[in-house]
Structures are given as structure tokens and as C-alpha cells.
Image (tube, rainbow, N blue to C red; front, side, top):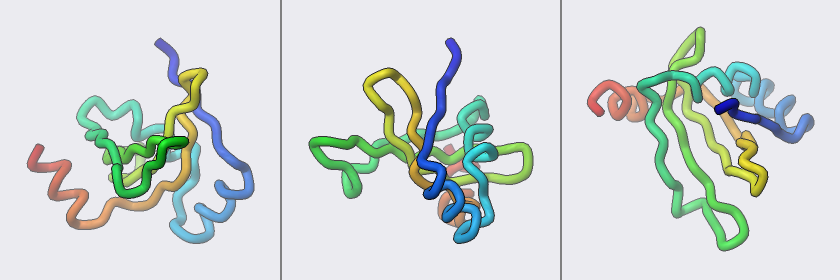
Length: 93
């Protein structure tokens, strides 16, 4: 099954400026066989269910925020370098 990704171009530019992580790099984390995904009830609504993923890109461990659209496309919202707490969760799974 091929994963489809999409995002808002303006948001992607802002993400690079704020976190120095491109959404192209964030895509890579979804192909990490050891990636961890979990539902984010604090940032979800009836309209949008949000999820977090901790996974390795070709460069580093990332923390990615996303939602899934009706057409099974992964809509990237945010991506940043994983913090120490995320690394610990990833390494101790």
C-alpha cells in the first residue's frame, strides 16, 4: 500500500523556519519500522482527529503531528526534532 502525503505549503515553510524540519523529511519517519504512533486527544476535535508519530528520518528522530483525511491521505501539521522525552519513549518501547 502506498502512503499519500499532503500539507499546506505556507505551513510547511513556517515549519522549516520554526523547527528546521521540512515536511519531505517528516514523511520519511512514517517508513521507520520502529515508529510509534499515538492518538492525541488533547488536540483532537469532532472534526479532526490528530495523531503523533515518533520516528527516524534519514537524519534524526522526529516528532510529527498529523491527521488522516477521508481519502486516506496523511495531512502533515507539524514536525520537529524529537525532544528527550520522545527519544526515551522511542528507545524504551
